[in-house]
Image (cartoon, rainbow, N blue to C red):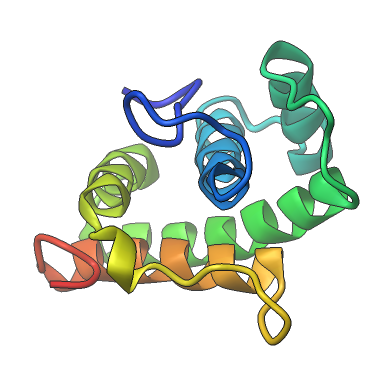
Length: 137
């Protein structure tokens, strides 16, 4: 389940899909970090080499490193209470995928790409740890 994650089935990673592609890349890199113990920057570089965005948006990789680091801390904290980190992440990915589009934060003039992604992914992770089926139900 975890690894190379498409933004949504059948949805291109262009235009408005860049935010989804960013969040999917964060989930994939985080899974690799948790599974292998690889450094975050290396996991991000490997993921982007295997799944490039052309053209790659400005500051995409540094933002991705920040997002993965933030989410890793939350997953590890929640996993200490609720089981293994990879299982929690798989459940959070499912919750993230099930979130209705109208409830997602998107990058705009007030919210950066990384802020929106951290918010969206944190809600998914926290929903799993709280036992709710979806981060925005």
